[in-house]
Image 1: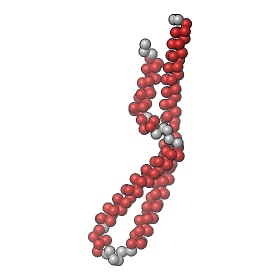
Image 2 (image 1 turned 90 degrees about the horizontal axis):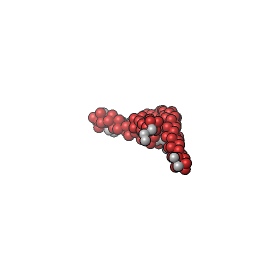
Image 3 (image 1 turned 135 degrees about the vertical axis):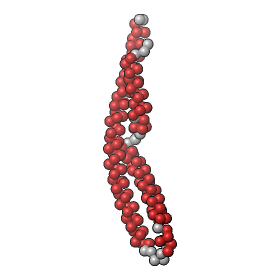
Image 4 (image 1 turned 90 degrees about the vertical axis):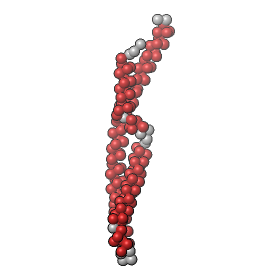
Length: 141
């Protein structure tokens, strides 16, 4: 027999899983420090690769100047500038990523709390149905 309450709960859970919280549910098992740290490492890696690609493109753009003045260039000065920009960029990326992913983790926890409450409601419904079935079997009805 189809129970409307059960169908409503299961439909809401399925919609939450498919439409809204697919990523949040998969990331829900992380500790806060692990979640934030893994996203910071990912951000640092992505920005590092992007920075060096951009640096390479800038060098390609100025390749004629570099090849003409290869002996006269102050490589130490340009190296310190590039390193300084990289370190400054990394500090900004780490700080932004830390605050962003900490806030995102807190938001995901609230979403997962609601999702788990719906799962608990469905579990309670099944327990109640099972107890009623056992009671009906025991009384012979």
